[in-house]
Length: 630
Image 1 (tube, one colour):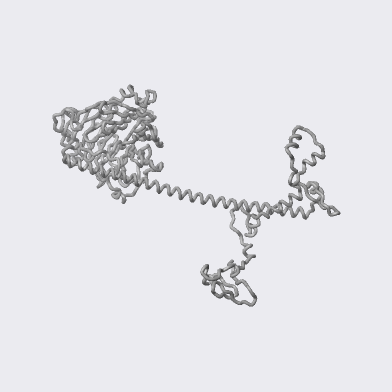
Image 2: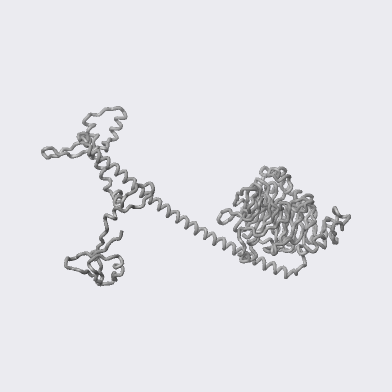
């Protein structure tokens, strides 16, 4: 249906009319012809008015057109019908029926209602005068033409409704119901349209908020990258000042942020394990690497008969370099910095390895302890094992193989260690912490956790009643025994933080060897921790990661996971954790959302992890080591 344009007949003798200075034929014009007509709107001397054009609509066709309606609306309703259903005159039939049938009840005052409620009677005249209001009165003309006011009720009672009137009222009622149905459909359509607009606005707002968070994350990433570059510059300056190769224990601190440009990893598939190392035969217990595309060391939890010695990998070529053989039993913890690796084992010893020597002299290692004593001390050349040369210090042995030093002092398995420069702190299942000088191999300080538990510092946040029974804790969580009593250690300057199986996070002064504060909150053993200038982050088998504010010494945030946390690492943007699942769990500290790394990933739960820059390495109970791009 197209509206047709005709000229307005101003006079019967006129055959043409001027339209903005252009003469048009008096017969009908189509829309295309009108579109070509030069209309000098507002520019000509005479303004165009409604008399210049007339539009003749095909009224019958227009009114017969159906309007689109929801499923619940009546069908076959024309545009005119829909218009009539919404105008005020659609209520006229209802008003007429109410007047005729006296639908409106007489008004009753409060006084009459009260009298009826108390059972009192009123005079008939008073009752009649009070029961009929002014609105319920109508005027009826008598034979003399004079009007007499009568109650509407008497009028309705005196008029007998015929069959035609009842039929008419039936049609009117059905029509009114149809009008209500149409109005309801229109209101529902308006509500649906508003809801749709609200959803669109909400979606647009969410997208803008995500963009804002992305900008915040980009800013934090740039801050981390800048800090990493500054640390790299400082490290290079220290190397130039000290001379290369003078001390194998020199170490840049474990980087908090990226030290390499993200562009190096842009071509890697993000969120996918693009490398898999599967030489281990038992679950992975510990791992660490020096830098992206650097050297990786991974250890498994097998027995000595299963050859659970750590394996050294080249991440650049994705190849195996060699083994670190020497521990009697599995390696529980390790740390890699540059070409130096420290390992702590079930035999209670700590070994210092020079990774540059791995491969060529892989079999020339030392299994002796203090003063060269050990299981193979009498036959130091059997099975391809050769002892090294003794130094003036009897507390460690120097060898020609990759094992440079052996530190012994703990009576049980070493389960946590952290070193920086020439200072090393270890934690063991004998419930002690030891501080070592790596230049001399001497233990310079011993910290007793049991003594700290029984003698809490006055400023400590813990009480004896709030700590866990560590003797049964690990059995309760299904790990068997109480082997890993110390779950994690880290220090900076003279400040040391440790996490243990009693669920406590303790802060120590390394100058006095005293625990000056204990942070209580975990209900399970603390398995891992890390801290920076503002926060301590601890993971526990109670399925939580707690972030402690160093300024207030209180937990500022608790992150709930689905399984016990066995390893974690964090920065200003995220917390990455191994929490008893096959996937690596990532908590975004900005958006408060969880994500996971599972594509081409582990088939059993992840046990340990380590990431640097956008490069992450994880080890699982499936005996595999996976390399990811974040």
